[in-house]
Length: 385
Image (cartoon, rainbow, N blue to C red):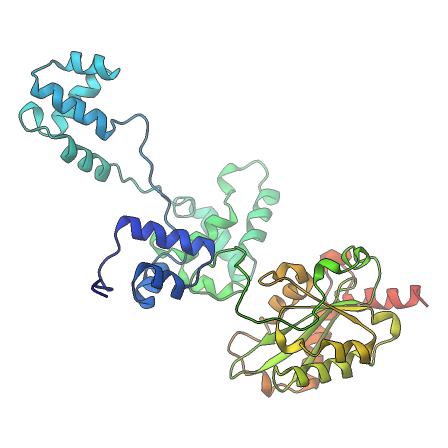
C-alpha cells in the first residue's frame, strides 16, 4: 500500500483506534483496519496504559467557530461590538475580549482564533491522588499489602465515613497506575496487582469464532436451574490453566462449596485431559458427581467418554463467556499467585499441586460465611449421609 504506516495517526484514526480497543478488538485487528503496523498501535496503547483519553468537549459558554465567523464578518462590515453581541445574544464584553485577544479589529481571523482558543483551553485536571498526599500515602500502603483497587476504594468509605478528602474510585487508582503521566502512584506498585498487565484490557464480549465446534456439545443454556442456584452439591466447573512452554494444569471447582482440585496433565490433547479427569472424578462419591461445566476448549471434545465413565453430564459455556463459570475463573485468578503467567507447569508434581489445592481449601471464604471450602464440603457430605 502507498500509506506510510509509521506516520502519525490523524485525530479521526486515533479516535477509531480507541473505539475499537474499547470494543475488544485485538491489536492486530486494529492495525489492519488502520493500515498501520501492530507495533505502532501497541506503542500508542501502552503509552496510555490501555486507557483511552477523555474526549474533549467544547463548553457552551465559549464561542463556537460559527459564532467567530459571524464576529469576523461583523468586523469586516465595521459594525460595533455592541451590534455583533446583540446579533449573537452574547455580552458586549465577551465579543470585546474575543477580538482583542486574537489580534484586534484589523487582524482578527475566525479560524485562527478558534484554533488558538481550543489549544489554550487545555487545562489538564490534577489527579485527586496527586493533589492529596495523605490519600495517596494510604492507597500506596494498601497496594503494597496486595489489596485490590476496589477493596481500597470501598475500605476508604468505611474507614473515613465523614471525610470526603479520603475518597477515590478504584478506576482512578487504576488510571494512576497505568497512566504514569498523572504523576500520582509509582509504577512499581503495579507489581502488587493480581493480574500483571502492561495495560488495561477492555471488558467486552467478543464475537464467537476461531476455536471450532465440539461435536454433540450441550450448551450451558440447557443446564437445569438446580445447578445455577448452587442448592445441590456435586456440580463442578473446570478449565485448563495455561503455563509456559505449552504446559497446563486442569482446575476443578465445586460450585456449592468452592472446593478446589488440581489435576496434572501432560498436554491439552483431549485424550490426556479426559483420562486425567476420569481418574480424579472417579474417586469421588456418587453424590459429588452430578455435572461438569467446562470452557469452550476442545480439550474436552471427548466429553461423551468422560460422561460414560463418571455418569456426569458435561455442559459447555458460550464462546468468550468466562463469567458463566465464575467460581472457576475466580479460582484461576487466585492460582496465578502460585503460578504466575509463563511458569512451566510441567515441572510440578501432582503432590505439589495437591498442596496448593489444600491451601486454597483451608482458606476462609467470605462467600461461605468465612467457612473454608473443606469445612463446607464436610458439612455437605454429612448432611447428605
